Length: 166
Length: 367
Image 1: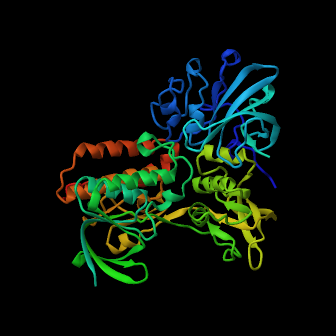
Image 2: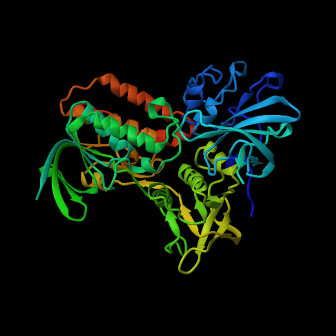
């Protein structure tokens, strides 16, 4: 069976407006991480902007705009991670050292992982990328969308976008 | 026969109807909401995902929570809003200004409303294929009702047909309920729903097969699998069918407006493919050619619940104004601007074209 991994089937295959990586130099220095948004389609939606406490996700001229980010203002707070209805916001901290990075991902499945668990880290088509270590499980808005903090090998930061609890 | 009178009868207690009722009652009208289901909220009660849109449309809030917010707003109006559950409006007799209603299976009664807002929603389309009548073949609405209203999973491994927003969202909800999704089939060369909804299920390992459709359901007494085909540009099958193991097949292949009451009310109707069926012509207040009848939500053309809620507000407010109640005109402008914003992107392109085909100028002067 031909399973397409194309953009048209919901897989990000390259950077696009609304789905760009943070600038490399700032990303390497910024403790606490920076937001990585993967929202490349114009749809009527703006909670990432309205939930951002620092204005890092810029105000939308038109509600259909794709998110545009001022990385200098991002604190890595991850409020957008829990607010985004499309589960399209992630915060990634690559300043940990020791070959590790911390990724904060939205999670709405069961079972809920616990701090200290080892979980499978999945890529954009659900493929197993690596194992990860759960550092924290938060629920910033108290609305049952968890934000799971997982340490992963730093070389996997552009690939890991989900976890599976096993 | 029991007979009820009211200023405004709202047909349907989903997002559009609740919004219409809240707005009409807020302006001072007496309202009856007739809802065929046993609870208010329509499809909202099954929506466990967070909504899109802006703060005004409760973006970032889960659908079932939005239903509660609307019901609370209605409760602010005290006795002015009466709700009749298990009640189907099944006849319109314009000469006498009467509609008939069936309450449960026992009572048949007459309602005499001054104004009617029809917010009757939509019906699911099904797909013809061999064996589509065996147990295990579901519409997406039924799967959502089973899972999210009654807490029952439809199967262990589901094949989803259709990658519009409903197919994508219900697939995600199946995963949340611990059900495996074998694949999502989509006849078009791209997903029809929001890209982020697709990305959510893709990263959980669900394949989306573009240019694929179901050939037949397999199984005698119940579904044991499905045969699927790749399609060419003319939607004709290519090559041999492949077998997918599954114990349920979920059809999410579109909706059609539930428009019978509007036909009965003599509203001028038009077939508009972009709005997914026959829909009434309307003025910018969502009023039909029948000056006592308004529409809102999916019955006016298939769209998102966010838009349905705004249409409901416009219709409810306009019905209140037609009753002679005092209504601030700038409220209409605000609602219209929000609708315009919601429809401004490329996903709103078909809706914009569809609405343009049915909006009639010059009816606004009616009171």
